[in-house]
Amino acid sequence: MMCCKKCPFNPISGSAEERCRQALCGSIRSGCADGFCAANIGSRCYQDYYVVNRLYQQDPLAESLVQHTLKTAIIGRDRALLLSLFHAASDNIRLQLWRWLEVYEPRSLWLLNPIFASVGLTPLDSMIGMGSRRAKYLDAIMENPYSGRLYKSAQAA
Image (cartoon, rainbow, N blue to C red):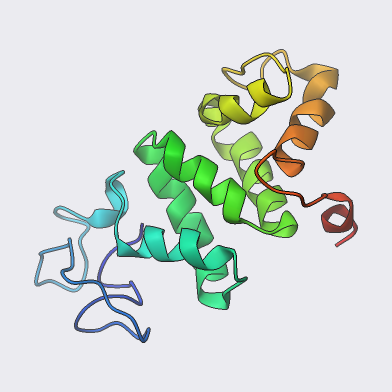
């Protein structure tokens, strides 16, 4: 999730056709740096639901907001949201999400363990010790049992 003041779904200042009911950031200042900000909590908001629901349709707004929903899932340790995000994402976006997790949040890979277990891979705690098995874990993500997509075309892009 992002700061409500920058969110396209903000009920007052948003630019999207659809709007959330109520902004979570309550500050009347232009920024939330000195107080409560929705960008720093791991609770789902309207934006996260929009992203997951519209990624299936390759909605440009949903694709542009996918990193914010990934952040919500990581901060909140929300396995269901993260799995839904990977399930809904196109091959290219799924590959981007995986690479982001590898680089910036390797300790959060355990949230994807249901996907790994479904293909018989050992659960992960982090990237440590994965070594040559990395390709198998990437295959599991890209050939997600909930999705029939292949990642070969995504790697070419």
